Amino acid sequence: MNSGFKKAGAALAASAILLSAYSVEPTAVRAETDIKYELYLDSNELISGSTVVDKGLAYLPLKTIAEQLGANVVQNGNRITVRGKVYSFAIRIGSNTAVLNGKSTRMKGSPWTRNEEVFVPAKFLVDALKGTGLKYEPEVKTIVASDIYSGHNKSHYGGLNYRISSDGKLSATNSEGVTKQLYDFETETYNPHNFEFTKTNQGLLILRITDIYGEPMVQQQVFTVIMKNGAVIRQSKVNYFKRFANNAAVSVNGKELVLTDGIKLRILEDHTGSVKETYDLIELGGVEGKYAVEAVEDDFLLIRSNTKGLLTYIDRRTRERIVLYKELLPLEEQQYAENNDVPYYGDEIYFLRRTEQNLEFKITEELSGKQYTKSLNISSL
Image 1 (cartoon, rainbow, N blue to C red):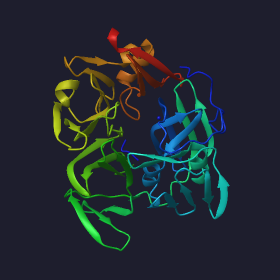
Image 2: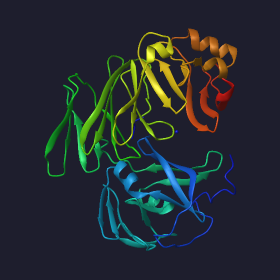
Image 3: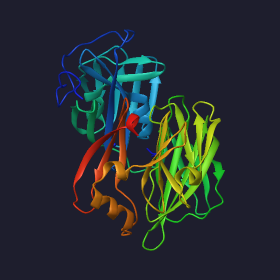
Image 4: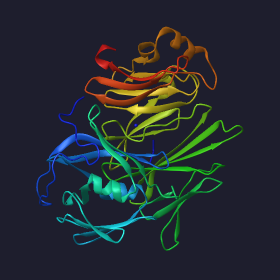
């Protein structure tokens, strides 16, 4: 669940994300927008993606979200049934009547399909998944909801239960109890693991497993596999010390996959998993040691040395390097980022999003404690 949070005209209604109630045929052409969704789980994990808005009603991709939550989805003709540990509901394509936890209810719009995905009204799906606080944030064109029920088994996805053994063997077990070994990392693992699943636009599955260990829990190792049709086609393993990493799984535009061992960065094609480009991170960053890769885009990379901890912009065409704290922090905070080593060296600058040529960052000043967002125009770099 990785691996891994402007004004849009009139704001949608905060509680229902509705400007009007309506029902349309499932085969009707839908109005695509650049509006996103962010669903925050009760486990503090995040599910995000693109939504579709038509005549003021927001629709969410049911199958994609249900799979990420480990729910069981069964489709029989136009009827789709979804079962989780604490909820169940059934919908029918083209009908605004649904059954939620055994009771009939009406939705504001009718579910419809496209490319084997099923889109349902956002408010209904959030309510069904035990979520709260559904709202629209026009400044960032994002639909947000909280407290989505995550389930207790974070290693369950698409009807399979994934496990990595203490000696590094990754396996998956189906509902009939049949276990298949997927890959052997040949590495000792230690503590309960965090499993993060990412479904790519072209149907590949990225699984990232994080293991934190040592005393006092200052070591992080991250295992990543990319799977196609249930088989591992690419993999990586990386270790970090003190400063834990949250590597990107896919590019900002969703077209490329990201895989790193902390020394090399591989950019992969979606669908095939073929390697498009390989980067030497030490050569790019200019500092010895492991690196995190926090964002990848057509024209830039954002990387961070695990040793120095400074977020660095890399031009993919020229390989030019720009350390961003000098562009974004006041002088005294720059000096602190350079010299303070408690609990680790570096800045607290994290990439949020891109809007045309502007990159937006979330910044925490270590000395003042101030938190804010700040944009940087990359054409001026």
